[in-house]
Image 1 (spheres, rainbow, N blue to C red):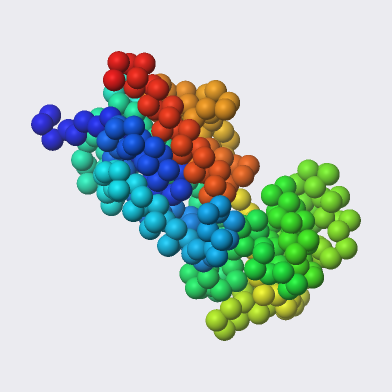
Image 2: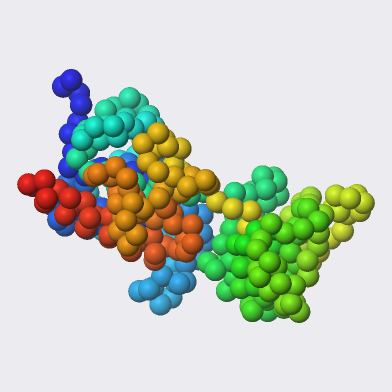
Length: 315
């Protein structure tokens, strides 16, 4: 029993939500311990330029912004640790969590900020440009600005794909939508919106074969999965809008999740989950906005809610 660590506040995940929660929790003297997770810094570390976060008039790279947030959290004595939580037990009043090394932590409060992972096609060429920051993205709102006056391709058939295509159409000269089947999955109103947008071309029954280019994307090779005919579409940006998967699997036995896996808020307008003392922030619960600034806002909410929870318990 002696190797069990007891903490007031455990933060699981280290994106904008986790670091903001850490800053607020540390300033409230909750002595937060943070496990950075599989991707320290979260999704933003895969984003080259962040130009829409307030306070950075010249913009900043995703990794640099995460390093600054980490420094700020550490300045107030957040215990930031490498590693990740692999198992939890939220059945009792003490929240038990285990790291990948088997270290057991008993936390009075837990803030979940494990985020979500964008789904990609898995093509080797796609992953190459994704790693190089050379024209592949899963967020039109984040990166569409860089493709003003250019031609782009977007893959997807749901509401979010239609929404992102419409967003891109206001910035780009042409947007080509690739839909794998002979129809959209999106709602009728969203389909009508893209169909009526003159600079959006929709290609049905179309699969992506390869993202083409040297250092940056220059074209996309596609194939009609009915006829087998291949063609090349000139484009400088390739957007993937086939959904996100929340990183919430380890919580499924204890927390209320929706059908995709997003954690449900117990009370709208708060960070409460259905388990007292467990709070959620950022993209693990947010399937609507998925922005760094909204994640940071919910991180603040989670820390304040956790502080009030502890205060009510006599801390």
